[in-house]
Amino acid sequence: MSLEDSNTHCLTIHDSRTGKEHTVPIHDNYILAKDLAKIEIDDGILKKKLTILDRGFEHTACTESEITLIDGQRGEIRYRGIPIEDLFNNNDFEEVAHLMVWGHLPSDTEKMQTRGALNAAMVAPQAVMGTIASFPRDAETYPMLMAGLSAFVNADLESRQTRYSHKPVFHNQLDACDKALVRTLGNFASTVALVHCHKRNIKFTQPDPSRSMLSNLLHIMGMWSQPIEDCLNKLWILYCDHEMTNSTAIALHAGSALADPTSAAIASLCAAYGPLHCGAIELAYSGLEQIGHTRNVPAYIELVKQKKMRLFGYGHRIYKTKDPRMTLVERLIADNKDLVQDDPMLRIAFEIDRIANEEEYFTSRNLKANVDLLGCFLYTALGFDRDIIIPTMALSRLPGGMAHWRETQSQPIKLWRPLQVYTGPKYEHGEKALDAETLVDDSSVSSLELKEKGYVKGGKKRFSIKDAYNRLYIKATVAMVRV
View 1 (cartoon, rainbow, N blue to C red):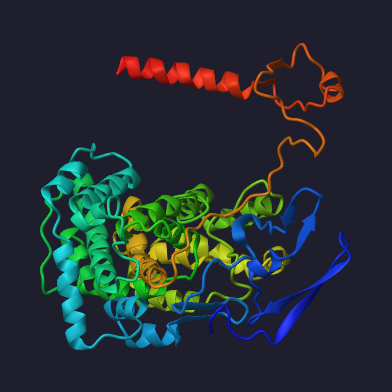
View 2: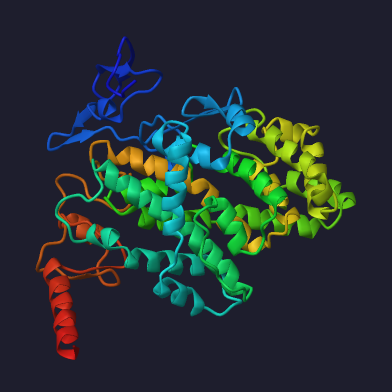
């Protein structure tokens, strides 16, 4: 159903400022912000529209989508209308990624065609390999990924054209979108493998056209075995998309400016490494290491309850019950128990989870272990070093992000440009701002004196428009002379 459909229900709003009543249509349990913006107040000079302030967009939907449904109250996730449990049980990651992007499970022919295109995009140009090789082997993984992906953008003619073409390269051009997003997926996989190999002094080998993207990634990284591929083929399904996450929203924010998909993925990666997003996983690991042993968990929990420590990797804004992916991750852990049972961090995590399920402090706040955190223990048990886990998880999420990017490219162009509520100094009607010939120094002129003269004072020093212009003109002239 479109945002514009069905308005059989409505809100009736009484504005106490004006005494007017306004009717706002309800569309399938949401309202349009533009309908609220019709509520105005007239101060005699200007009409001011009602603005919604929602820090963190906790109660605001920014787009409409047919891709992923999350019901946090019932504990359900559906990809394109299919329960995630069904996909986990009956499909592999390649098939689910195809479903996310193109809306249907692939035929055998479609699967092989997409595989071939992805593997071709994994072949790294020399410029990309040289960019990553220029980093010290002990460099941070995150900036190496950013640099490698940026080098891929520079090597891609179509991506570069988005900066110079007056005609949109991707908007309403789904064939171009499809080719570009496949290149983005392959480029991202190649970058992850290159960074892993460079940091460990492993020779980079080009992908085998007959293998899946996941299989090629593992082979290039020197980590392939059939049990590892089988495990990740299922785990990646659970991470393939999670609706409008922070990083997905950032990708769409960039995409709304008609950026190419790899640049949108780079923007998404910047957000993902923040400590309140995927970066929380690294902090959670550090927290578990600090605990050290299961016997120390009760004392640590008490510090959390006293707000002296923070429990990273637990709790989620969306879910009011158990994350449905958690049961499936627990199945994978059980299937690989020979690998994970000796992991001391996993034992600590399970002990925290046990206490969290019993303590009123946690149950009343719906604080449960985050599925991303538990999934990480599978990575460590399978032999992945911590520095490469987040990049690998980001790669598994990328098909969902690209599906959202593709979807928005077929919708009307709308540059995302949020509003703000200004809270700084301002003057009321009847007062005058300082004119172009007035220069006021706060140390010598009081606010009362300015008020009596009809001016408003704010900040440490108020310069005139003319003075500011002259200062900028002189700086610009000096800069030109230096050049």
